[in-house]
Length: 79
Image (cartoon, rainbow, N blue to C red; front, side):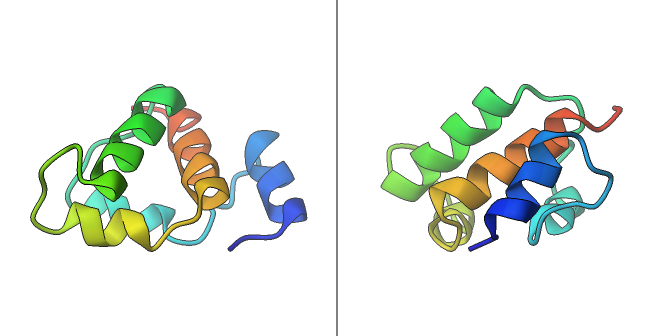
């Protein structure tokens, strides 16, 4: 779980990605994607509502705060 200071930096547009965010780009193009869409997808993977091979396990590894921080950071990146 990331601390409040790190989350605040992400929400305020700090350049440093939150833990776990950079690994997403190995398979996905998320830059500029609305944070709400990314959060919804990760929540669906976490709950099992959206079928997945690997993403369900990955999504379960992030707290809701971490998920929001990652999604917010990616939304602020240029495509």
